[in-house]
Image 1 (cartoon, rainbow, N blue to C red):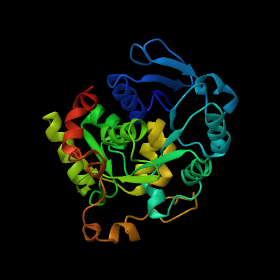
Image 2: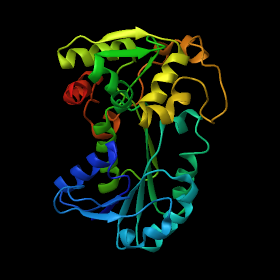
Image 3: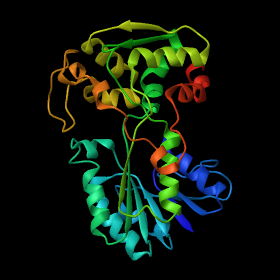
Image 4: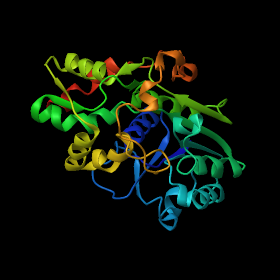
Length: 292
């Protein structure tokens, strides 16, 4: 089976590529810039950009199943190209925000484009990525062994990127997943305070938690750059999912809501048959990246 992994350099995409190679599939890894060592031996690295569909023709030729990173603006054209090239199924990296009804502009249009194609489809909808904490907290932990957080007692169910990849690989390579939308969370409700504690335990070092205002956290994220700067306003409550201005006060409706009333959340176990990976395991898997 020939599979094209778009977003192959990302946290989920890298793991999808590795698993597909281990299973003996013909794998193509799409990346904006092909670099030596960008993919495991035997993987054909394809240079292309989902925002420029004209660059994807060679990568899609003869592909049975693309793993599609969400780019709403070009989704219809890209899906049409995949169908014309002979694909019979598409697995979308979507978002749990679609399940919750918050996402109508980013992931949902990609899902709809795939569903309208007539091809087999599966949507993989992760909630909060555990990896976000490496992007947000990694720099201050490495530099000072500190996390500066405006809402230490807010929390969610962070999901391990490997769980997301496990589900994507099954949907790409096995029958029985067509027409399914899998919402994936971690197995535990964890406050930010507890997440910091688990990272500290994994490192075997003390990490200080310093409570700051949302405004101060925003300054820190913007100075930090990268993922933190790009997502500061949304993550800290200065804008809502639609990009509209909102109240950054710690006393938001979301934080006042009793999350424990939600009960168990859907995890990868329903698809893989294996217990979902815990945040503690994730922290152990990435402990060295927090130390460096």
